[in-house]
Image (cartoon, rainbow, N blue to C red; front, side):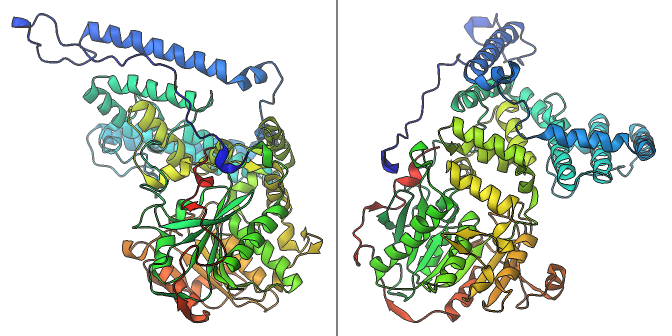
Length: 634
């Protein structure tokens, strides 16, 4: 079955109970309804509400246990209850605590002291005195922005009590001695997950926004939230698939991913899109973009107002973009080497047929950049110079400092992932990878939606970025395991130990201009990790390497249209051994980095030619952009 042949129909949800609405008060004169009462003041409406809510709750539980067979497998010992191997980290943490009772006792005294300070502060506040909080939320923590968390003494006490405990627990674990560093970081990560889960904002009776919504809607938000929960369980086949955006509003090629173009080439693993020109002349050398296959390419083409692809076309570039397959079990045999050969090399050949040009400028984003770096090293070994410059968006080739994702790649977890992929027919389901990324920012990408969707009963927003974030992809087993084991776990490319197609690779052999973009707050490809990659390219002084640090993170740090006038970027042409030294001499500039990068690209360009239309060369258009591969759902 080809990519375009795969079914994309959305399964219908089972019928749900009709939502109850609060009744009008009985006994109104002349049959007219009296003033509507609160749900909790109208006994009949409350009774009806409780009946419907109970029925909906029973349906949720029934659907969960019918569909989520994994729960029963865990209960009967047929499936591991700890696929993430958290237990080993927690066991080692407890052993470290037991081995140092003096420090544990001191930490306990510190907690009592913190709570004594809090109680004294709150006692003064309860007495009506204006006092400075004993503890404040960390910068960027948006959970406690409602004024009630500051003005209501009881809620303020709950908030500060939680923050005090959270700070104490994280500090206690961070200061533990005698733990393996990897296990310690895992313990810290999952402790943060625990603390995020028990935040008072996640309890309806404590969350002032939920309480206000319940009063305003007379309780209907709770019933609507239950309905949303049931629908998400149904959509996830028993697993909770939280909707981050309205999944019905956006239509690819209609109101998202709309830059005009044609698919001009396709094979088993990709479609190649050539975009229509918007200028009379274009740069002679085409631009070929390799996005990540963990996500879909249209993050670079959400809307005309923020589309990187459209902006590049407007700058006079012939833009080609790879749209990766959303693979099913029929592609489980594909390897990382296949993605280099059928992905990178066949795309290069197709660009030549479409334009007649031997050389391209290339861009690699995230794992697409990791693949591009690997391919460049292989091409350097063989004297292949079809790529004359390479730009990397938040991409890593050295994974020694690659952040929290390293916590998911010990042997036990990789074995569990392999079994999970085997059970799914040889692919990693898109939902699994999406859950991992969401855990890295659980307050923003999990709990905020639990509150909005299930407690407030709100409909998901019509938000293009969150729609894209929800549009997950699958990955072939061999490709994904190679990526996790050879790059993340063993870091073979950075060590000069990676062998592809019989060649031992060395990034220092690459001898073309390199532009490395990183994001200051990137949690997936940390900017220090990207800097290490830049240094690898420069290790033999063959490549001219530019490192640029953009404001924001993995997405907003890349997709930052100049017209938005947001964020900033820092520039330093030097590449000293230490990142701190680079930062010390870097010059910060306001706004998007795109114009600075375009200046860099123009300096190494080779003149202009008349604009090229898709189909002008030896490749006939297959279908309109964004193509059919991208429309297949995971």
